[in-house]
Image 1 (tube, rainbow, N blue to C red):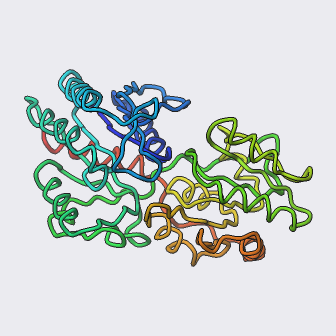
Image 2 (cartoon, helix red, strand yellow):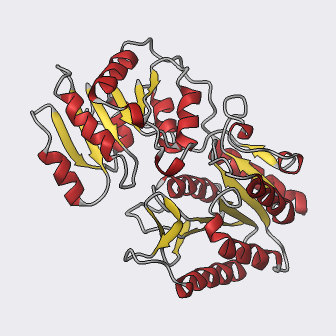
Image 3 (tube, rainbow, N blue to C red):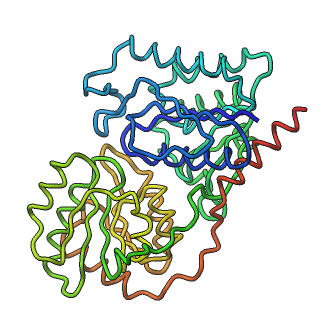
Length: 378
């Protein structure tokens, strides 16, 4: 079976990393996989058996998702956008996938509608039309107006065979963040959560006894790091490790403000999940991948959901998880050294969470669902 996955990350890296987990699962099952990425290139390991194709890259202008920038930080022009659309259409025509999966679209990435619609039309024009799937995380950014939800529903009805929802409906049904019409509901396929296998503790013990502070793979979360530096001055007996994404200058600036040998500031590590598995507590935003890591490792966690630019996705996720032992949420507007210290004491003093009953095999389930649908076509 041939599988084509299309994803564009515009701010952080979570969308691409989740798509990579899906691509790896399809390849491991013996399928030929092309992963098309339209965001900024990352220094990542491409899974064995996956061919990665980079479109002319885009990123958002910070949290302004209505303004797209090219790799040099200038506004994306019509030439670049047409080149992206042409490459997508050429790829689907040449590869002739049995399965075409679009990550987030049509529930998001509206600014890229032209290229996605061109891709869908090219796929429908193939002699053997692929099974077309949308892949969405547990929580979506709620539509700002009813017409946007209606448009997404119409696109699903017109172009998609199913919507893979990477969640547990008993914990986070899609209705929590998106108005689900009858037309969409009939196409929903819940897969469980898509994530890597649970991480093993770092073999060198890195992270042991530490408060691990992170903010994903994007250049956001500065207030979290700055508050952590302030809070670290007043919690004795704890070592703090800040893992900072972005340019070296950003890391150096935060490092220059760290005081004492009990505070480590370093670039985001490729073995982050292994370090996390050793930590005493985690302080982070509440993106999908980070939440999965916290749930899998079972460590106490303070979530500070990203809410700039009116974003509500992470706050909804954090609220849904805050009822679990050892998890607390602090809104960024309420974030101070004192509220962070209080939250850390609360979660580290809570009873250990019971072994999670959540399903973390969403990638394998996605493969099974797609394979079933292809076989059903004969």
